[in-house]
Length: 59
Image 1: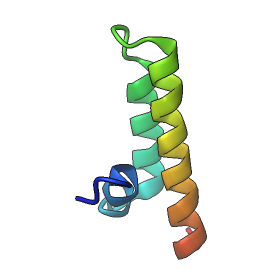
Image 2: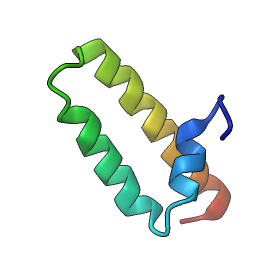
Image 3: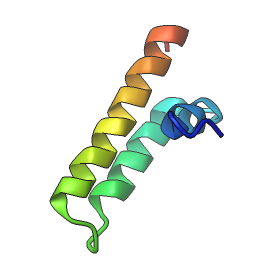
Image 4: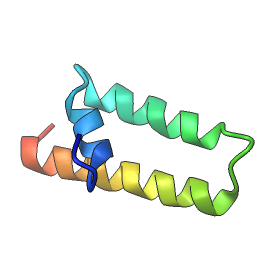
Protein backbone atom coordinates (compact mmCIF):
# COMPACT_ATOMS: atom_id res chain seq x y z
CA UNK A 1 0.00 0.00 0.00
CA UNK A 2 1.23 3.49 -0.80
CA UNK A 3 2.15 5.02 2.56
CA UNK A 4 1.61 8.54 1.23
CA UNK A 5 -1.94 7.91 0.00
CA UNK A 6 -3.44 4.89 1.77
CA UNK A 7 -7.00 6.17 1.41
CA UNK A 8 -6.64 6.54 -2.36
CA UNK A 9 -5.59 2.91 -2.64
CA UNK A 10 -8.27 1.79 -0.21
CA UNK A 11 -11.05 3.53 -2.13
CA UNK A 12 -9.72 2.46 -5.52
CA UNK A 13 -9.62 -1.17 -4.42
CA UNK A 14 -13.31 -1.06 -3.58
CA UNK A 15 -15.92 -2.26 -6.09
CA UNK A 16 -17.93 0.86 -5.17
CA UNK A 17 -15.70 3.78 -4.11
CA UNK A 18 -18.73 6.00 -3.48
CA UNK A 19 -20.19 3.68 -0.85
CA UNK A 20 -16.78 3.05 0.64
CA UNK A 21 -16.18 6.78 0.96
CA UNK A 22 -19.46 7.23 2.80
CA UNK A 23 -18.89 4.23 5.06
CA UNK A 24 -15.34 5.22 5.90
CA UNK A 25 -16.38 8.80 6.65
CA UNK A 26 -19.18 7.60 8.92
CA UNK A 27 -16.84 5.21 10.71
CA UNK A 28 -14.40 8.04 11.43
CA UNK A 29 -17.20 10.28 12.71
CA UNK A 30 -18.54 7.54 14.98
CA UNK A 31 -15.25 6.98 16.81
CA UNK A 32 -15.93 8.13 20.35
CA UNK A 33 -12.37 7.63 21.59
CA UNK A 34 -10.82 9.96 18.96
CA UNK A 35 -10.58 13.71 19.46
CA UNK A 36 -12.20 16.17 17.08
CA UNK A 37 -8.89 17.37 15.63
CA UNK A 38 -7.85 13.82 14.71
CA UNK A 39 -11.26 13.13 13.17
CA UNK A 40 -11.01 16.31 11.10
CA UNK A 41 -7.55 15.36 9.84
CA UNK A 42 -8.64 11.84 8.93
CA UNK A 43 -11.80 13.07 7.21
CA UNK A 44 -9.80 15.60 5.20
CA UNK A 45 -7.52 12.82 3.97
CA UNK A 46 -10.52 10.70 2.98
CA UNK A 47 -12.13 13.64 1.14
CA UNK A 48 -8.85 14.41 -0.64
CA UNK A 49 -8.53 10.78 -1.69
CA UNK A 50 -12.10 10.67 -2.95
CA UNK A 51 -11.61 13.86 -4.95
CA UNK A 52 -8.43 12.45 -6.46
CA UNK A 53 -10.01 9.21 -7.63
CA UNK A 54 -13.07 11.03 -8.94
CA UNK A 55 -10.89 13.43 -10.89
CA UNK A 56 -8.69 10.70 -12.36
CA UNK A 57 -11.40 8.17 -13.05
CA UNK A 58 -14.37 10.45 -13.64
CA UNK A 59 -16.54 8.52 -11.21
